[in-house]
Structures are given as structure tokens and as C-alpha cells.
Image (cartoon, rainbow, N blue to C red; front, side, top):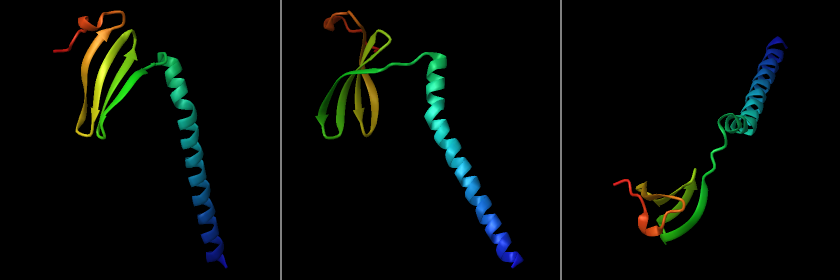
Length: 97
């Protein structure tokens, strides 16, 4: 009888520990990102446009802090194609080259 009771105590302790870990994980995912964003100021990246070039490649126009970035997404990697400040003409784009 003693061994059976000890086994149930161990299983209950394991279940309680797993429940506490799951609860802490849920609370962390739920509240910590909001606290971090509030502390440093929310970073707002806007997707201003998107175009599928083919099934594996996509071109995005992103807006962030008064700048616009043209980004190419592909399975082999991502790269910034061009960068320019809002208000500039299309012919006056500043490139990183």
C-alpha cells in the first residue's frame, strides 16, 4: 500500500509542476511582449505593399520611422533592395550601395 500511495504522490507532484510551467509560459507570452513594447516605445513596421514575383519570391514595401524599404524575400535569404525617406521622389531613392 505504501508504494502505491508514493507513486500517486509523485504523479500528482509531476502534474502540478507541469501545470505551473504551462501557466507561467502562458502568462509570459501574454503579458511580457506588451510590457517590453511599452517600455521601449512600440516599434511599428507597416507593410505598405506586397507583390508576389513568383511562388518563392515576394517583394515588400515596408515603412518604419519615416523611411521606406523595398525588401526581397526568398527561400535562400532576404535582402533590402532599396531604401528611401518618405517624401522623396521615386527617382531620388537613396541606395545602400
